[in-house]
Image: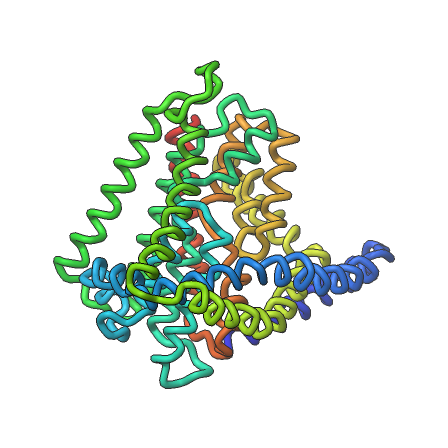
Length: 419
């Protein structure tokens, strides 16, 4: 129901803003821009997102089937069962969804978005088998989705690449701040959703959370100690840039090889298992396309109408009116755009790099915003759409509240590191 109202509001607000621009400001191009945006978003939803995702989906769905038959997914589920069963009490012990969710979270943390999506869609499909109300999101599905939207990242490869491309003197300077901001958002998402679902925060769950946060901080400290590539003329593994680039990809390739070799050792016909699982990838894409087109077109109308720009201007005015420090305000458009459109937020970040420089305070903060959250509305459309969920319950506001806490944390952390 909430998603229904959000989608309607995208168009209604867009219409109102466009009429104001037409009548009061004689903007005769506004409706042309919005209609062109509808056609462009409809096309790009399929041609630029769904179709490129198809090949990746087919491969990793096949790989997941090998992992399931080899017992690797169940092994992961057993390994993290004490922690996962407290976050997902509705999911039985040793259920495949547990291992699939772990694979999704791991790929996200390593910055491997292309691998994370198939793992996540497979996990959502498994959770749907436990859902008694097929059109209404279950507690487990909401917890999984909100955790996903918090965007926990240990290796922000894309952000580092964009900063380097913009001529940053130290493109890895946001590594630790970004990691800390995403950690805050992830813990916030667990607390928000867990309190709403009345989870039992016992000593074991708190100990697991503490251990994970400590491990993240230690990893951040280790990365911070590595020199930057610009300080070492000879290429070496032990620089921030090289280590970050190599680690995520080598771990993913090792997982692929482990699944294949493990399947062979378990007497699984590996290629047949791959083909059997891969066939599911196309079916998932066909289910997802209508949800993707609908959501991305609505967001595009909202953007082209100028509604998002009006919101940003209003927030800027509020901070100026109360006399608050407005140094961070020019970077806010990235944070506001991020839940709606990853590409839009990326474009705003690159524009900030061009205007203020990637190593300015605003440039550093924009980088942190871009990497410390995920595209909430896109993820809701993609993941819930793949299993036919129509009633998302409190998933939107829980995800957006976690995003807001992540934004506030990112601002505070940026002041600590960059001012």
